[in-house]
Amino acid sequence: MSFEEMNLGDLIAAAHDIREQKRALDKASKELGKEFDEMGIALVKKLDEQGVDKTTVNGIAISVSEQEMPQVSDWEALGEYIISKRFLHLLQRRVSATAFRELLQAGENVPGVDTWTKRGVNMRATH
Image (cartoon, rainbow, N blue to C red; front, side, top):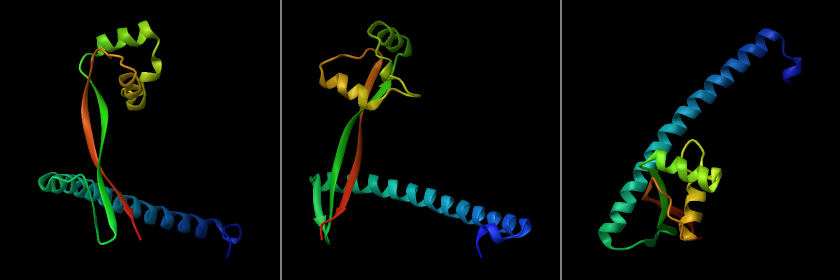
């Protein structure tokens, strides 16, 4: 039976059931995402302990990735810099990591922002 053929009560009940299933799946996905992130941290630690940054095990290749990430230490200095240079593309709700890295690569010093290195694991099947 199509949704158009359902009466209002049945359609509301079916929509409610689907919403509850979706909520349960969203919750499970969030929990799995947290667990996966924790495993990524453990993998990076194990790889560091073994002195390797990539390996393949049972047909699964993993490698450590690193990206420069901005961390604002002085919003006033950063704000003055953004205004004076008209670099508004640096702003989101946080400093735009992509725009920040582009400026770093161009040799630009961005006042008021410190960097920290975000590390993660890339994973792909090799077979």
